[in-house]
Length: 417
Picture 1: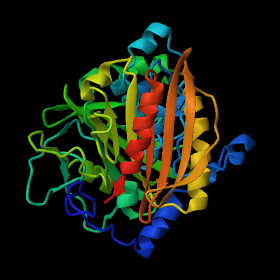
Picture 2: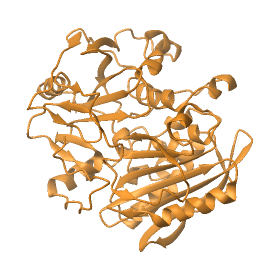
Picture 3: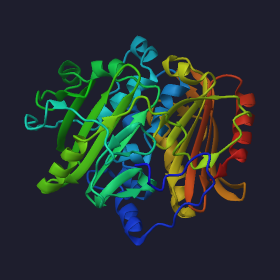
Picture 4: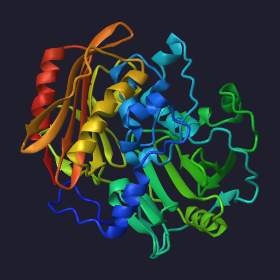
């Protein structure tokens, strides 16, 4: 909603001090559950990191752009939609070649969220018809407007609107994505191919003129129910996610009613960097903005066209993260190489170096990589600010030393807003 405390890229302002309530929300929301974890998982201190994502990066590909999906999945907003996935990642080489960023993003959210749901969805409407009214408020970082009760608090660090610990919703719009292209993965046939056989997990409907799908069901987190709606057309893709307790029928109904107020204003002139709480010197690399997904931004050499290019060779991903203590930031940084390797990339080293950059503590991974026999570079920095943190990841599979120098200089130019 546009009156939330989200930071604007063109406005210099201070991040508001978190209230005691917000601190409580963050402490509960960011502690990953240990239920069902192996001893190896616990040894990696998953309970200390800031996401609940475990294996989405099992989907493999042939380019740095596809492998960086392992880091994209670390975004807190995404993490609280996803549950531990069962994606096999069994794509042949030809399929990998054409498995572009749009479909990867869609499948990550779809197959990691809707696994083994078995709900009767007939009670949810077949058609959502809305018009924008004075009561509608825009969801920051999107062209989506909705009407929500005033007691839903915007939690900036998690990019969501929350009434209590297990009652919240969030909206994510992925620029440069296409619901039409991704919808082929949103069919019962596609689900059956993934081993999901229940016919009741999907409901196709319309949100005004847009194709839409809806599902709901129990999360793998005990006592939690998730409601998911995705819609769009050839030019955009929006996810709406709600979470409530299994026993909270009133909360579930409230979330459904919020969903039914959603209005998408395609003509709205959205700043793709609206949620960015940083600035940097873009001229160092000359990279162009390719995609924004809530508080995560991707830059590539050629911008949006690289999202369709399976051989896109260089990119930067900048993710805005919650404020962390140095101890938790170090634990988080040490966990990241393992996640990247889950995507099939081989790292020549996994040593995290602690340095100061611009007066802030930085945890740096500087390593050569190998992805399907092709050598590259990963330069990753977790920059710990006073009010928030930033995760930078630069990858390239050619002109390695030149790109690494540019990545380093780019990180040095980053300034918190």
